Image (cartoon, rainbow, N blue to C red; front, side, top):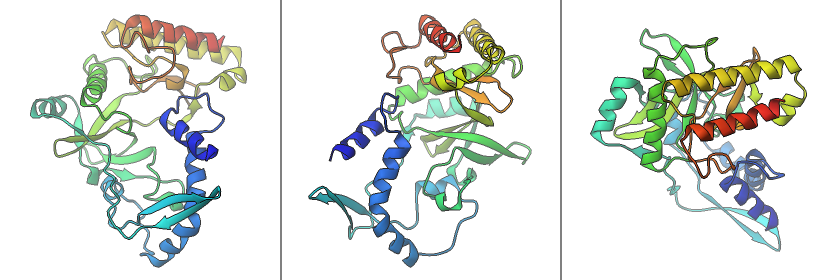
Length: 295
């Protein structure tokens, strides 16, 4: 029971401060279901979808509904008779004016036009991947980072985030190496509902952290501080607020460049941005914390 409630807390507040990660929590629950799931997999259709689409992930053609109980502190999974999972993907409904605005400022893709990429075949249609492939205007395949609206059920927050990303596009901010800012490539739509967002893909080493900074050279840390300062200054000069200025929203790429990502202001539960969301002052406070880590 203690472990179960710890997993619930991690899923609710995955900002840090736990000795258990969100992935660890999911793995703990999954291990309990494995004795039940493996025979179901063996009895189902053995065909493997090599390049599935987001539509197949959001609306699986076959599903099994299971529940988890415990007797004397021993986990006991059980399959239910129903085939209705009672789950709907996180979608944000928007009005016609906002749809027209999206069409003018960025590309809209249907879930069936977004191909999912998996590093491990066993994760296919089980885990939502980071990398997806879409077709650009000229028919060329483009790698993108997919971000669902998992934590943004509220329409106003979703609209606010997309509007900030649209500002970055409209301001024609210089690309790298002038600035290192993750750009919106498009939006995934299903009728009048926003499914998620597509960002320019970045081959990364990971998120900036105290541990990463500690094992990096002074020259590299200085470079990251300068890149973040320059990128954020360019955003502010164009009237764009980062909104979630923190090390957790800085991505270090394979060439050791520091990218500003996320633009999810108002959602962070850290001290930064909780009381003064979406302000230049908040951004500067966050940048000061990042530079402090790098120093």
